[in-house]
Image (tube, rainbow, N blue to C red):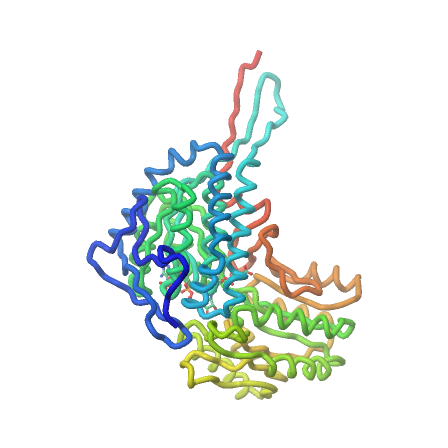
Length: 491
Ligand SMILES: NC(=O)C1=CN([C@@H]2O[C@H](COP(=O)(O)OP(=O)(O)OC[C@H]3O[C@@H](n4cnc5c(N)ncnc54)[C@H](OP(=O)(O)O)[C@@H]3O)[C@@H](O)[C@H]2O)C=CC1
Ligand SMILES: O=C(O)CCCC(=O)O
């Protein structure tokens, strides 16, 4: 599939720094491939510390003006950006599918999802407000005001190339911060297209800067920002090891951090659940983006009495999933992002089977005629809790079923992980619903619901899934600090 869009200027092959589209100073280039067939579709700069520093300079210089721009005006510019993103939904959806591999309908859905964050924060900007505090002593006026933290470094993953960058840049800009951003090596094109539309919306030069880099040079770019005291915050989505590295490395300049890291979501089906609804919820939650989503169920616990009935219903649904390239309108599961991802999924299947799991559906690569990155949607029965997939995110179309006996057993198993991003359970017993929702150690709990994401909701984890919340009325907090003003001698 070749890279052609209605609007050719949405295919950008340069960094965007200080309002200019520029190559890497040393001319280095990075080829971007379509994961469906690994054919190159475009090139972007392979940048290093020089470009990172230039981006930080630009963001630093733009900060005073952007911060002083009335919040209402910042909101208006974000609204224009939102309108342009939606007006170009087809092109952006196609770009996402081409570089990331999700089916076209999902790619376009992601554009709407990304835009919903831009719109949400456009509307939050004019509502930024502080507090007037009742003074405990006479003759004082005490205020708490909100200020933008300053330059924010945004580092995003490949799995939602539009949504991840939008839900970090939009709140940063709404709060009055300026941004330096580095998209994932595999998916920079969507970010560049979004920034092209931000430029067209009238967001001033230097307010958003974007620097592309290969996996090999990414640390050089991000280290330059980590060492730069003018960069006051890092907003990161990605793996837990990289998140921990960023937390350690930003200690010297004590940057504020938002870390949205890996998950290992449990999905619990109790014997009092509506089994058909649970199957629907699991299909929606698990197979979004081919299972490459940090809130995807990673371990499915089913109570003994309904295990076989649930597994039978699921086999038919998993078997019916259509695997194919994003360009094929029939596809429901596209290619995985790269060979590393495929190897990890197959290794998790092999490991579980070696420990006694049964393959109920799938279990291997498919469509090798098309390319190397297709994995069959897979259902494993009787998985044991020592399997590798119970302890780390698979990030692929693999559903492992585990049996449990009691509610206590299910909750204990669900919480037996250092991660705590999303969790899900299905039950029709109101008392159990409250008990289990309280007991699950996760930032997000889906109760009789598999599709939990929304711009209106606080998204984020606990434990080693990170900290900070994206979206919702809390989404600006991470990009602001509170300044206390104390005026004395009032007469
Ligand atoms: N929470 C989530 O939403 C996500 C979780 N994951 C989990 O992480 C696993 C690995 O995925 P992967 O894409 O490799 O995730 P990474 O954490 O490696 O990548 C996420 C982002 O961090 C960048 N990065 C990588 N290494 C460094 C570094 N040393 N310093 C600064 N930035 C860095 C990447 O750049 P570059 O692409 O150039 O390497 C990318 O932009 C997945 O299988 C999944 O389990 C992955 C993606 C999203
Ligand atoms: O997987 C992720 O990186 C988080 C995005 C998913 C969502 O917003 O639901």
